[in-house]
Amino acid sequence: MSHLSFTLVQTKLHWENKEANLQMLEQKIKSIQHPTQVVVLPEMFSTGFSMKPELLAEDMNGPTVEWMKRVAAENKIILTGSVIIKEEMVQAGDTVPTRYFNRLIWMLPNGQLAYYDKRHLFAFAGEDAHYTAGAKRLIASVNGIKINLQVCYDLRFPVWARQAPTSPPAPLQRRGEQEPEYDILIYVANWPERRKHAWRSLLQARAIENQCYVLGVNRVGDDGNGIYHSGNSMVVDAMGEVLYEKEHEEELHTITLSKNKLEEIRHKLPFLKDADDFHISL
Image (cartoon, rainbow, N blue to C red; front, side, top):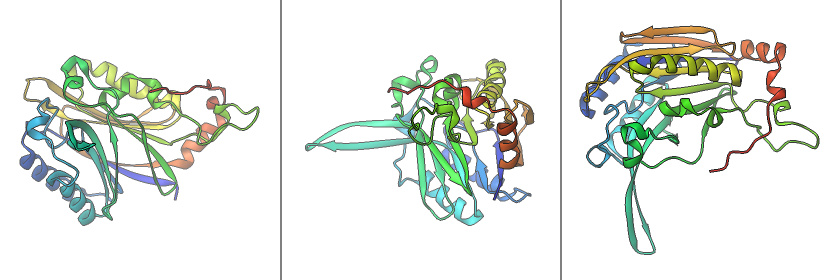
């Protein structure tokens, strides 16, 4: 199968009100008119971009993850977006302080899941003082199409999204001469309107430099701090062309992406073969 359908959910969020957000989002998901395989929600979709994890966090068995499991099963979709998660650990009989994560969940309709913890924490808003940074990327695969999943501020750091080899280079073979690591790059976000130029520019840049599709799913409306979000959720192709964008308004948009078209671009313009050899050190 060389096609994959995504529904982008650009929506307002109820500030720090999980019950209201989950109810609202479930209604929106049920209202999707077109066949879809992956539904993408914004960053911290159940709370908004809150710096109160001590009050709002749940563990991986909590009601929000269980909600994702149920909604994915009932609607026969893959459901993804980020939520506030806590982890309590015990080492050598001592309880380690609770850690909080801005965690993207990738929920399959059969109840299996994977997750990615946001690597780059937004210190400008104090996120680094409340949350723990992730240390590894998540690349999912659906019908042979590979998807790199990231969160908001990660967009500003191109090395973290850079195509890497799927296996160690063979003798005398450069990294860029191997099969690309992924085909689609997704960012879920709470990105303010005041910096929308950076948002739009960087989504296009990530698509061009990695020769992949990029989906950016952002919220709209004011958050609890009075910060306005214009949305500008986008889908960009490997040439940097904008296939979809919506500003200011709530919208559910379903789009089908073709891996065949992507491979045509990579074949005609084999720029990745000239890529630098590098290693990410954490």
